[in-house]
Image 1 (cartoon, one colour):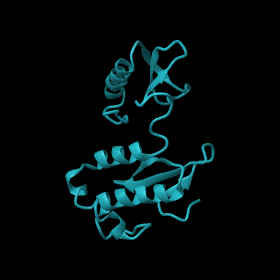
Image 2 (tube, helix red, strand yellow):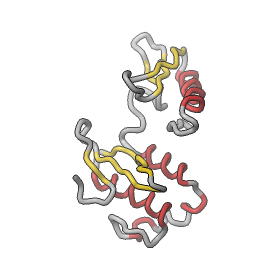
Image 3 (spheres, one colour):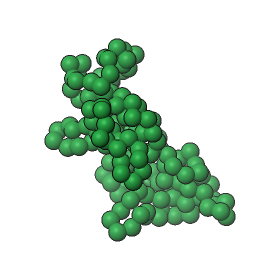
Amino acid sequence: SSKYRGVTRHRRTKRWEAHIWDDKKQVYLGGFDVEEHAGKAHDVMALKCRGPNSPLNFAQEEYDELLPMLPSLTKDEVVLLLRRQSKGFAKGTSKYRGVVKQRSGKWDGRMGQYPKRKYMYVGVYGGIDEGAAAYERTAGESNSGHSVSNL
């Protein structure tokens, strides 16, 4: 449990996870090492979804620079930006999500967690950019646009 609205501690990873309820659905905003960062992620999305009168974890003045930009972004874009800031977004040895370097020097393309298995392998590629492109293609096809993009 956290002292911040919309923040919980993940049992296994011990990261602080930020979530918000929007349109009767819980939206994951990211996993953070610092509890306050998760609280701020929740605040940003609360401002996007519910406006400036939304109950926040921190003073609204902390978001004064961000507020003018929020109307030009969709909710999905804000979620993706918050996830990119989170600890859980990019893991492994590459700058791209879903691309991991093998000991051989080649690059694996992988997609998230699926029922009964940890990853779905996209393929093995000679270059990091090829692996990232394959991840993007698969993410677009497999998840109806709900996968986190590298773009």
